[in-house]
Image (cartoon, rainbow, N blue to C red; front, side, top):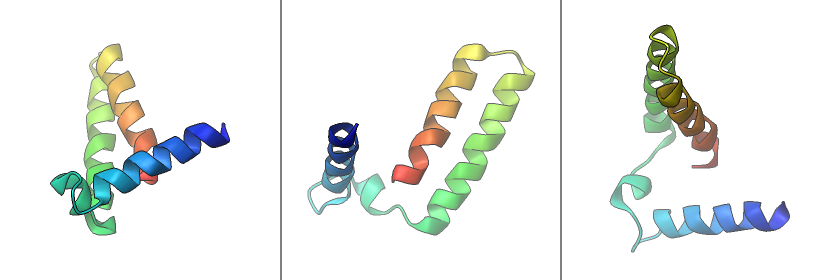
Length: 68
């Protein structure tokens, strides 16, 4: 488990580095907060419409956001 977390930390560090992903580098707590609200609404909408695959996708996205 420690190796998985360390691997995730390394990936995030790479994405947020100068030669990483511009979107990840630009991500602030304010933007992350807005993104979390948006994903929550998308998850709610998918659940309401019975779209299980979309529900799983949005749940996964919400779970990964604290790591960013």
